[in-house]
Image (cartoon, rainbow, N blue to C red; front, side):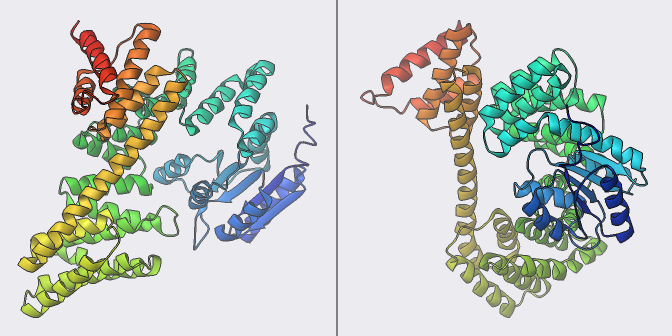
Length: 529
């Protein structure tokens, strides 16, 4: 066992704070614990560079860092770039006490959270716990950092056998490793084994994630409800429930639960973006407008910023301009120059500049629908017609608004096929990609003889590619093997109907025809028997 007086000797620490006196005080504290390697930075950009070079064991990061990234955005950036190594402890320090800021901080999952002011004793106590765990799990973290998940899983089992006190943490880490490998059935098995003994919210959340990935959205929703009933501030459970409702095409429920999550914790780009998209769907323009404004505020310096957010806000502002709410119209129109500047600054591509140009000319046209303005609009639409690359979804939304309200036959004739093709490409690309991913997951599970998980993955794949006979065969085969394995038959009537429709076009001479008929007859007998 490591001597408590020596445990900090090999630990490296990075301190990030823009206030010199606090940096010095913090440095003196950790050095008094026995830390020899301490680096200090005053801004997130320098901290990113310093951490990339030295891979510190502990990061002590203040939330407020002046201009540039804040402490939470730095954590998001490290995760987004896959720079944060296993075993690094990220401790967020803040003087903020507002509940929405605290909730936002905790959502990013720092390893610990310290509220100012705190004493040297408090800091030592917190770091002792983090260092003790890091030392116990060091061989496992090393394996994970070397991309050896199988070794890490074996080391977890060995550590559990030697040290019962860390058993739950080992199981939690094993489940997370399986999740990262998309082995949802194995992860779910671990979470369920924990939940049989103790109702831990993180295990419920992990199980819910697995159920959703396996297309078991009802089970996922039940767990989300358990979590939020016990803790109404559990915003991650609201977010996951929203994903479940979207998978079920219940957008009204998704909208309602997203509003609940926003009320609890509004400082999330992803959540505000989801709220804006759902509010737009229900034509609640003021909610969408405010949500996109919040997205843009949060996106400053953030790796999570997207061009679509700015173009979608142009769409919302334009829709507001077309209403008769004078005060609201004035507010919306004031947003245009700032959005144009931000797009020009952050996104230099041809598509982004085309979006600005067509929007500016359309806004001019709305003010005075004379022939000259109409001709200018036709000219820029011609540029869009000649643009060779696929248009993103937000640009398609903008063009749809322009086509609907331009009252120019030539513009309608030119834009209509672009919008139709663009929407079809976006939907087919998303569906094809999702189908491929789930079909591959199903194949992996099938080879592992995890037939229930395989069936769930194939069912989702078929829902996204309903005319694919190979996926339909995979689904029926998994259902058949699951029944052989444990006498369970869980194929639904809807899944059978999709499979039947996908397979009915196979010609009798097709090598798949005989097997498909056999599997369909088996499934039909089970469903009607």
